[in-house]
Length: 480
Image 1: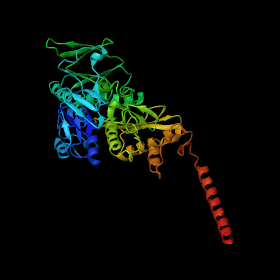
Image 2: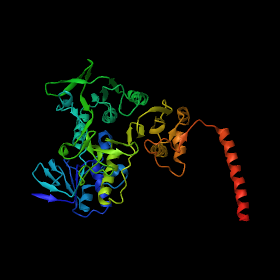
Image 3: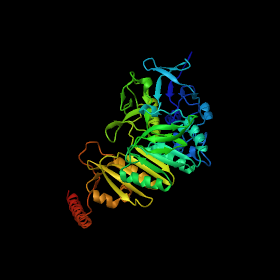
Image 4: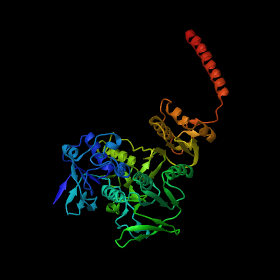
């Protein structure tokens, strides 16, 4: 028993939905494409699970956040897939893959063959048991990776109002879930081993701003330690947590967000792996020319920095999915995937965006006691990263545009003085210049100490010289 398709997307997360939309935009025919997903629903915008889905009033529910509403595009409901002749094979686990034979074998024993495969298997949440702590199966210990996890978390939240929650982890999931729990009138303690929240991205100064804001909402931070064990009641429900530093915290609810691991197991030994993911080239193509990988599972060349990275964010999933489809359908027209790393979050009244790389010296700007501030990262004399909290649409666009340019910075104090004005002014210059090549020794964009009188004098001299030359050249041409 089996079915054959020209194109198969393995995985039903964000990337699958955006790939499907791109396939239809590129003219895929009815019956050529299928999506295989372990989840029982069509692809949806996963960020909603830690935000709108957890709200106590007017919570987000499907079909409202099916892809591709996250990019302000068409909402792809199950009806949409049917109308476009795309087969959704839902609630289905693939237990083995053979890239040489171009086949997938489902847990039910069905063989699905393909001409081209896009691996969009994403990643799974790391479990406490992988760190030597048991208790994940307790009814009030929750993870958050898919719709089933989010639904279970909502059920526990609704029975914990006024109670205590312990959030294990200080990254994206931890910070966003903590905010949602506070909104649900639950007392929150956050526990993580790092010295500050969002340790992979934030500097201590940036992290302190958000931690202080969270404290005004009643969140308690317990840093520099980890979960040691749970305390259970006779029914197996967690009533508290013991930390390695000896601290005890009461708990009616525990949310665990301690990282993810890419789902690569089906392809280990068949495709080249790198940095924890499936290695792809600048067209998102794996070591097998018929197989592509996108999203969290893909390790791809980040052209602007000249190295391979695996990025865990919805923006990379969306854009890599689209690019892979373009590379399959229109290989002669598709350029290299040129992605600028991008991360963002919106919690409470806060909203920040980050572009590029958090490497090198940090230059802060803005009012850290107010609502709008930011930072630049300067590495080897070039601006390589930008962060902004509380910006406008135009300001966020400006930091993205200028970060891609990687302008040369020769005076950090002048960059600090100009602050956000630096990127706003530079982004408005025309024409838009390409990013500097990695390893290039010079760039046409240079920030130095201002020398305004000299600039003016030099301008007058140059203008006069040009005028004199034009007059002389005109007289000579008349003589010729």
